[in-house]
Length: 484
Image 1 (tube, rainbow, N blue to C red):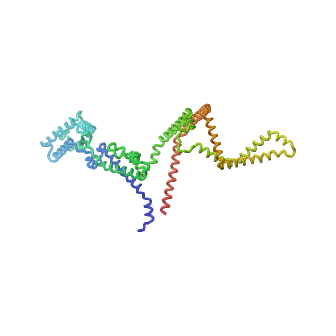
Image 2: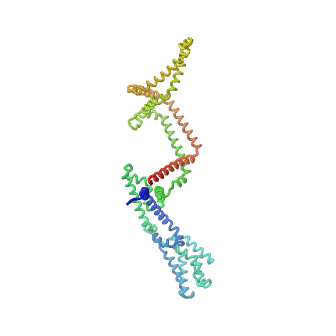
């Protein structure tokens, strides 16, 4: 079978790892939707019951919600009354019995408050208010007694009386429910059965990712990888499920399912700018203060001149290595480049010295050779400059000459070290360094107050955006080249 270039290009671009990360992110979103729906179901149950009753029928068993026996029996009695009135007349004995039964049930309903279990005290208060308003009564009990009286049905008509109940009171009574309580005093909730499937999935996913990365990268242990992704463990909490919004957001962002980079940048722009400004000021001031303390207390000098208390990385003396490198660069690179300036300096020095001498003044009086000293001086200066460079370069390149240079530099450093350890010299230098650091600290803090931290952050964001654009262009170019 011949694979077409288009199919080969599609296969190359297909990343199974990225696809799996997106799939896990989608599953995490589904789980979070279930969690949020479960948390909001009880407060919004009345809305679902009115707008989407099918959801209530489907999800009530998950929350262990059952019809409340008292209000259900009350509504069934009203249904029997309606059926009796429709089949027979209003004045039958069975109708009178049902009306008296409803009067008694109404009194019991008001006294025992069956809405207490479902935490719907406001619903009962609304029922009382509607009854008192409808019958212009100060008591809800007397209003219910009047509602379920034969005289009221005869005066307004059974259709109007039952119509008021069905339109105003029945919907409120229908929202009541019964919910059992377990041995811990908590409402029974079967959502854990649904959530356990997601918990098991995310547990296996967390273990898989940690094991896979530990096998391919031995620098970080298995436990450390689990600790680094601590937010993933929020998926496994059977309580406080709303915290899963943290790992869900992280997974959505990491999988590139939704790019939160711009949103996060805008949300954290101003706080991050001022926080970064504060942190940078704090770090620099703290660093300068510690350096000042080290200089003033003499710890810096002790660390510099005492090899025992100073921690070294490796066996190479960094100060000696730096000085040797600088000396090598000076002789081999710098001096040849400044040769004309060196010749000019030597020429000027020799001329001034020669003019002050008695020999020059005597030669200058001889006719015809007044210009001789200047020519000799120029040749002598050129000769000294070239000879100095050649001597230094040849001596430094020669083994014996290098040893002499090393001996000279060692003696120089030892002599300088002895002089720097002099108490008067140290005190003077410490005072100067402390003042210099204090000036740096004051000037930096004053300058940082003049600068806008948001402008600095915007500049950094602009540079980051330019870098991202370059990376995207490189990826597009690479994909186009792979297609061809």
